[in-house]
Length: 163
Image 1 (cartoon, rainbow, N blue to C red):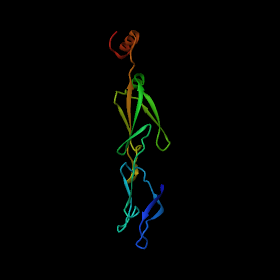
Image 2 (cartoon, rainbow, N blue to C red):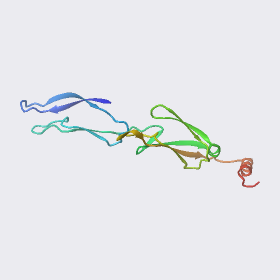
Image 3 (cartoon, rainbow, N blue to C red):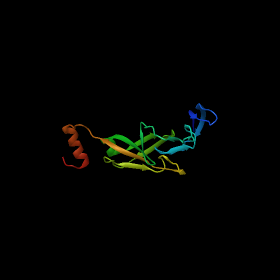
Image 4 (tube, helix red, strand yellow):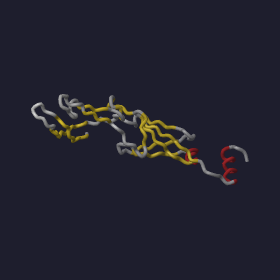
């Protein structure tokens, strides 16, 4: 919930001078509202002589998050992993937007660009209060800058690429 205090200028047919009016409005922000959602308070804006009060319109904006990016109703997170983790598996632990810890074991080989989708862990869907979008974990595999001759030989032996 958001309470807003603001001033408007109103004209009265009985007075020639404009009168500033202070009012507090309540906006009940719904979970999942998207950027660009408009909240309109009819006739709560400024008024000019001979004209009725204008509508007061607020537009929802989204503050960027350090970890998650919104994509519709989905949340996307990029997870950096090493080549070793990509080949042998990794357990990803994330703190959700509502403060829960989410443990996601990934046991398959992870290729660059691989994505794991966790249903119903994204943004709330404003018109479907019991549903959420998905959480999409995108993996960025960090490759080593160089390998020694011995490391190359070991990898070839282990991965079946010859001696």
